[in-house]
Length: 317
Image (tube, rainbow, N blue to C red; front, side, top):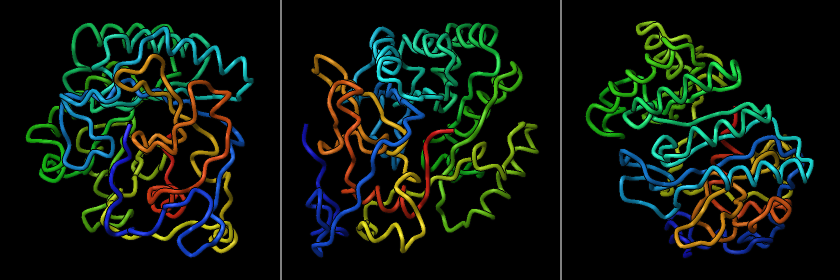
């Protein structure tokens, strides 16, 4: 596995795990309260977005499909390590491309976890077999699942410019099916295109009202606005002094509460990553087991600063 090249905007930074480019002590985060375990079900996706942070596409299988048995093994490890996990997350790629996704979700629900599924709600989810599987899960485990739909913008034109012509309408169709069948749904969007959060939430509020979606645009857990991960923008490195300067704690950062399981193409076993946003950076790979993943994480990447510490974003519900 090779690290992706460093963007020119941050040349000279994020080189040393323990020191910043100025020689200051780099901030790190301990796994203080592991509440969420993510499973990346594979990087294959039915569409290819213009700015996908994980480079998902119909041809990218750098992260191959996880199996339900592999998910089951990590659920066993949660119990063996006494992690206080409340939520299991499934992401991709497009999770409903994975033929074993319904079984994976069932394993998590059977153990009493809340389940969060990130999806574009398009054709893979709308296949008859997936619809039937989801409805049975809803019958068997009411109130335990949330499906968070990627809807980059409340404007069809802007959304489709990112995700492809017709994708907005197809996602809305999937959202309608989910709501009509009693599923709890949420939306994930992007803070970009010159709109502040207030304007973005107002736009989504109008969209949800127009289509009758039971989603609160003002609730950050129901309408999640993620900071844009633009690698061309220079960001500051986070030092240990930044916690007091910013009035924040390491416990506010996503890697204090979550880890992600992936399986790399050609690998014998899955591995555990520190962060859902950094699937290709070797430094954030923590080993094959949850025990090995209990180590501290140095904030040695631009996303650590812009997305998590300064942006305050979290992927969990």
